[in-house]
Image (cartoon, rainbow over all chains, first blue to last red; front, side):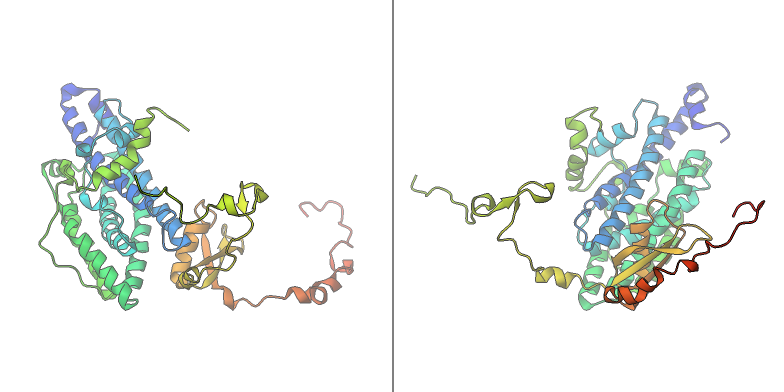
Length: 268
Length: 136
């Protein structure tokens, strides 16, 4: 790609609009992952087991929110319909959100949150690592900033997985249960479809199956050291990339969006 | 309706206690307030205390910035990163178990520090700076 997506947008005759629309949807997926995840992590603020952990989870939530803002802003630009990050975050309905379902799961207890963070951060780390080489300069730049952030999230989750898994009998039991709860939602992260394959072929996107082995290797190594067992399950939840979500998603959006929808255009 | 009117199980704070607006936080009860720490809170606070030192940039010393709780040293460094370097305050962090610090006692203040008070000749203020010396 030599021309910028914006140039393509302004010149629909060159059929670039299709590419821009594809890239927009891809940015929306990444942005929704981060946005919904930030909202879930925010649920720990003032409720974490320790003040120190409260701040740590808040920082991680803010990192995710920052990534969401960059991706959603870009998705809105490419879409060309005048929607900014706020319009995309606050004024879309549930079926328009394209995040994988693992991001919208309720925060659960601290072990649930740690289990999800281990998988999700390992996934985002490998994804952003590869996305830095995207032919789309904006996606590459956002990934380059985000990869350092999720590197820390991965470390945070790793430290806690080791301590809870290889801690007391009770902490081990709850950490294992957290993994068991999260696991049916993991395979969706590595699903591919026509859109992402098309974008990956042109060098814009990262095809999720290509990071599966690295993520799995990392998570397996942590689990082994933490004396935890990788869950075996045939249950696979999917559909988030097509706008199909779990029953908790509506409540999440209601809480996240109600202020912006009740007071349109409100500002500080 | 034979049901008795609703009565609160506990008397309300405002009705039974002295109140004051001390501290500017509005009405604060001054009696009947538990002053001892709840046992549950003590049980949760089993993590040891760590003192945190942050170096702002290369060439400067690590400076004490505060303390925090963490289960072990590795987590203490990470908590310190989250609590004390959120705004790019540092490039290096030290943590130290608070119990490992031996401090001078306030009772020894006079013996320790008072004698230095009248020995102004220990300050390098009795030298004439030669003319033409810059940047001193």
